[in-house]
Image 1 (cartoon, rainbow, N blue to C red):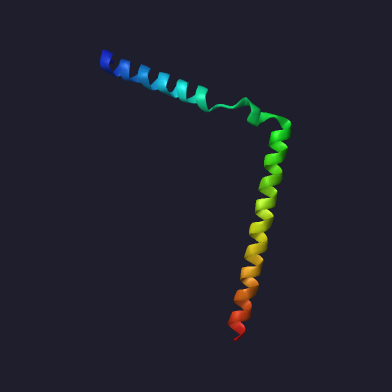
Image 2: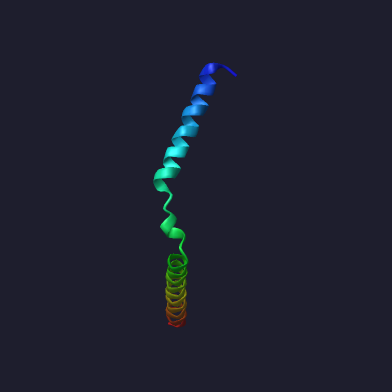
Length: 65
């Protein structure tokens, strides 16, 4: 490999390392935070299912007319 390619790979590795260091938040991985996230996801899924059911019911009613 030429020196230029090695230099670019080094720059890329350093950039990825700096990005990971700045974006990684260990507080997101606490038990309480994970449980809260799961509860939010369950709520969002329940709301989406309810909306889909209401849409299908409304569609059925409209098809009857």
